[in-house]
Image (cartoon, rainbow, N blue to C red; front, top):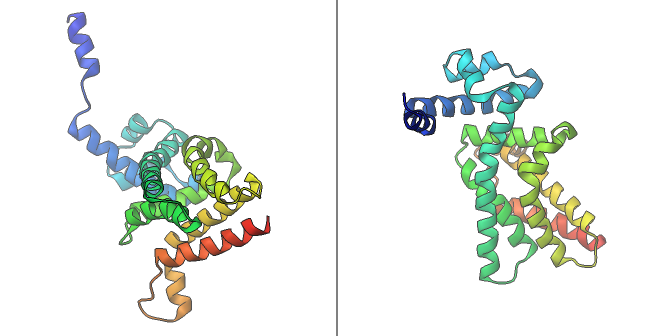
Length: 219
């Protein structure tokens, strides 16, 4: 075989079958990690959920930690693009309010999870896992922090009299509220004792804007 042919083979794109297997593995890993946590998740359970041989999970994902990183990264990049695009459009439309900033961060996620999409709801649990454990600080710094810092910049710009730490605090509380919104809607329905009770992005934005505003005004 010539050098040219060898190079062509190395550069050949993955087959449709390989891409489909990889997608199933990532989807399955997302669900298993969300259900069992990183420590509790087992690679054999991911393989079973994806309906692929165990060796194929190792082939596509590497070790369990590498697979976890890839699962988190897959949606983080897409969300970041959507959030920054929403923020850029809102800024082009005029001066931003605190509610505008929060809506730009929340809405792309909520649109993806609309209708109870199991994968996006599972991803919300993964974000909660990463955000709650300093052991995953490297993933947060790489995948979440650059976008979060852009939104904190905008919030801090509305309240120049307070320090950036206060703006970051208010933002983190708002992200926690978003995760609760995504994963605990059933509790709202149960506690309200109202059949078919719904939560809305308007309610989430109003709640977070009021809380953030109170904290930022307090300084």
